[in-house]
Image (cartoon, rainbow, N blue to C red; front, side, top):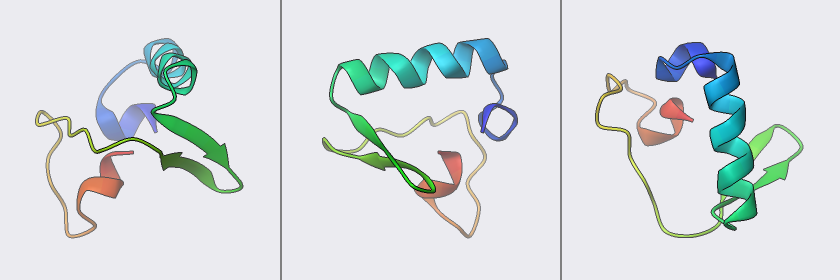
Length: 55
């Protein structure tokens, strides 16, 4: 995931933990589920997979 969004592994881990604490995402079997609204990292190149490819 870190490579896909262009951040270091440590930064990505910290951001995931913060998002979980804020109730924005929750862990599921194969990754994470958005639980509140939507957020988009506009710096990430868009693909055919859409927004979820960023995550």
